[in-house]
Image (cartoon, rainbow, N blue to C red; front, side):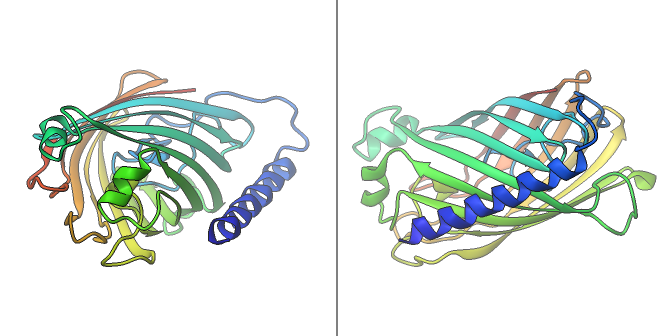
Length: 296
């Protein structure tokens, strides 16, 4: 019943969002592609939505403006001392108003898998389906004091339910709900983002949802700051708080220091130093983040 109720709210949000761009583009039958400034559509987060590497932003996927349909695809690798996360997915941006996204996460436990009796290189897998609605504002133009604000939901399905249950997770699927505010202050080449997220995902959902310490959703924060060195190059950092629901696997907050380079109008390469803290039995999981995005 709980998931059915959340599903109804999720579907309602998408329905409302679908009506808005119809009104905006009623007099325009041509669907344009391209039009956004370099890097202003963000890159792709580990959750599959447009944003930074760790944080979801309010921007909409793809290069299209309010008169068109855009899309993006990405592949991401996070290499840590004892684990490896591979992530790939796609996102569609409709009239710079709605974003629909999908991402698959594959988490390689390397030698830890053998130590836990799962087998060398055992992989945890998760599907993430997302929807985002731009409510008001513009991340680039308009009043510099008014950010672009978007609300969204992400349905996460852990594909290894027995493992999630073994570590004490309450569920193997759940929804995250969030609201984001993003602004690029062009006069100072500064990008600012803040996201509030209701979630109970353990390690982004790879270890299920909820646990013996906490079963309910908690309010978590994601923050990003970026400085635009040129039209095609941005450096910055992000911080993301995470719930700590499991007694068996303490969870820390995550942060990164990143650089994003727009290779051309369509391709962006992002590299970062990322710190995910403790993951299950291994501390100090710090390493490299590398992501390639194609956007149209």
